[in-house]
Image 1 (cartoon, rainbow, N blue to C red):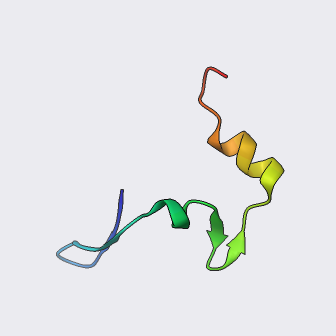
Image 2 (tube, rainbow, N blue to C red):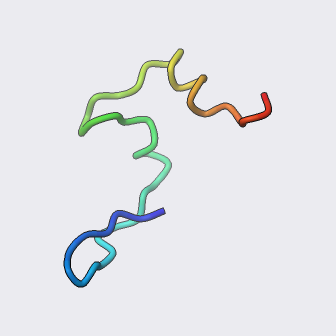
Image 3 (cartoon, rainbow, N blue to C red):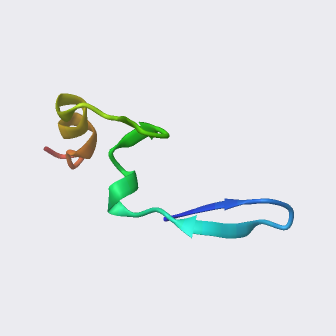
Length: 43
């Protein structure tokens, strides 16, 4: 997964595991919501 933008589109950077827990900038997703989000579809 990457972040890409522009015309023509270019990759700006990759999305790392550290990015996944953040909703907006430095607003971290709380633990309860993260458990729901990170579950596999069949769990």
